[in-house]
Length: 234
Image (cartoon, rainbow, N blue to C red; front, top):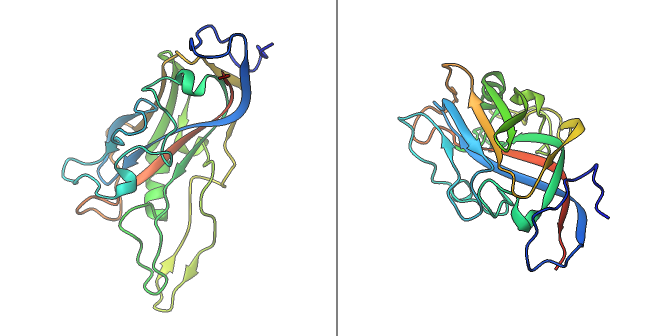
């Protein structure tokens, strides 16, 4: 029997699934967007499946990212196979924790120069001070808060150092890796419910990144839901 207090009842099942059976597992449900200098307003999350373009939130004068890993949804950026729904590929779920991870910028050790994509401490601080996240299930808001209230689910972790030419390099992210926003009451999501995240830059503000030219330091933001999942048995 399916544990009702942990995941929703599987009322809608694939006709090719084994009748009356579910596999119960610990799973991630995740998606991402790209943010860049000048980004303002809101961008939707979890609404685009694998194989489609990753949405961007950037200023009008900033060109689209040309970095291959930021262009199209793959297994590295989402496991959604159906737009806005968990579908039979994932199943019925209960969200028990939420994490938002900022893509970090690698630093050249000999010069201290960051890559032209990913966030340094400058960009991370800007995102944390201006941004919020809303999770909606079937169009109903379930939880809302500033981005810093959803600590990262994982990230590079290290220390600050000074290079030989006196350039300072640092590794920072949205909180301690793995801290997460753990929910005391899991949020149930049926496989046919509309799952929608909203990332927003508050009010009339816009993101002010260190690289203001070309593509404006494009950086991924991953939104990761830790879930109990009851999927179909085949």
